[in-house]
Image (tube, rainbow, N blue to C red; front, side, top):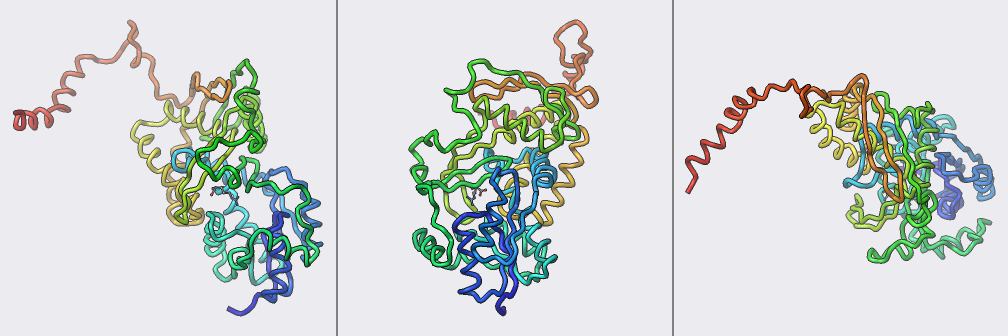
Length: 401
Ligand code: ARG
């Protein structure tokens, strides 16, 4: 593997990815580093990020607005899949990685680069997601991972950067490691590394605390079409605005915080704080709507496959064969998931209060009722139970002591 000449680097503006620029050039003999910063709705000032890369020695600094594809092609499928890793984490960080990888590859093709690079360390999940996604989209491109190999401590990294004109972080360094985008924030490290100590309020930015959430709750209504959220309070919104509005409402009422011990792909258990208000709200509503619109057997199989889907996304297999096959099943189920879910938001809770589907409800009032409109054939139950219980009765006859 000869040395790379032209490299496209995934760039965030932080110290690590900034140091990657001189490092790639001076230590690894790369001729040209072109940076790519993705706008995923994280709210950073990307013009200053763009300039930072140039000051650190990038020959070109590109910024791409990926918010719309992020929501439509990554967040919405996750909602349709009710994707919760280990039953809890809605994959806010994990979902962004295959998209950034796809864009890196696209930029690499445009500028005719022979490699791409990222600043992930060797301990996390993100390196796996990037490496596998890039390798599956562009097997011919090299993937350079300086931060996985340079072996510098935080202090050494900062000192190295200063030698090449990369200013040390000015504000008193936050002890936390934070990743954020439109779907949420993930916070790790510092005092959070003690799994027994509660997260300080300062780690949260998208959600109110229970104490500061309004005393009065709020009723909301979320409308879905083919499993996609399309309106809140009856007001139709485009996909990005739906996520923003769900974040606002849930965040205001203090819903969407998670404090979990999570199993990383590299075998480590880590303590993670997340706030993903909108995504968790929409998944809860969506799950509920499925309970009235999906056939019982379809729903059960889907619940099993959803876990698998979440694992695949977490484990960096977005572009794999099984993910594509599962999408086929999940998307087919979603054509029935049309309707409305009523919820009440209050002090950290998002409680489902009702659901209806005018086109796809499998709930038949005349079957369910205990009143005089009942049409269920009670006599038919007898024969059913005779057959249903037959094997158990035979077994019990033989084994009764
Ligand atoms: N544990 C989460 C995940 O694997 C969040 C990772 C955050 N990434 C980061 N580079 N800070 O999806």
